[in-house]
Image (cartoon, rainbow, N blue to C red; front, side):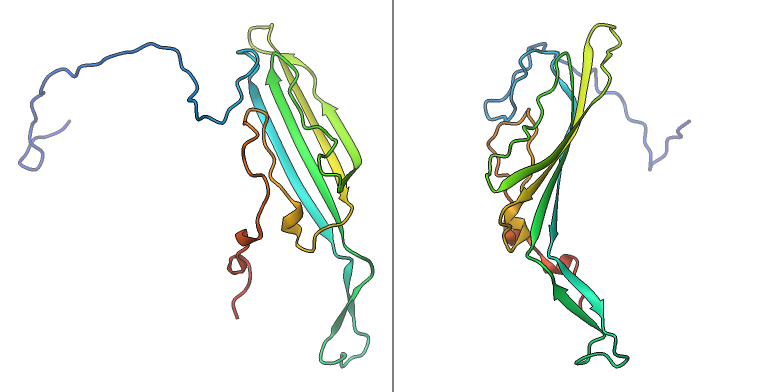
Length: 186
C-alpha cells in the first residue's frame, strides 16, 4: 500500500488513453535481404554453417640436447615440409514441410579439393498437428587447398544461410587484424 506525501503526491487520472488497432498483411521491405520461402510453412527452424580452417606450417619445435643450449636458445625450430591448409565445413539444416536446402559440396573455387564428406540425416518427425514433417540434415565437408596463401585470412570466408540474398561480402580482409587483442605487452 502506497502512502501519499509531499515526496509521493497523489496524481489524479487524466483520462482514458486512446488506442487504434490496425490489422493488415505484413510485407517484406523492398530493401530487405531475405529470400521469400516457396511456401508459407517452409520455415527453417535451425540452420548453421561453421567453417574451420587449419593451416599446418609443418614447423616443429625440438629441444636442444646440449645442457647449455645453442646460441642462447634451449630449443630449435625446423620446417619439414611446405604449408598445407584444410577447410572443414560443418553444417546443420532443419526445416518444416520440405527437406532443407543444404550447401553443395563442390566448391566454386578450383583451388579447393574435396577430400571427404559426411551427411547425417535425422529421423523425420512431425509437428504438434501430427501432419507437418520436420526434416533435419547435418554434414561435414573437408577440403584441401592446392596453393595456400601465406596469410590464412586471404583463403577463408564467412558462410551465408539460404534465406539471405547472395549480396554480402563473405571474404575477410587483413585490415581486420589487431595484434593488441591477444599479444602480450612487454
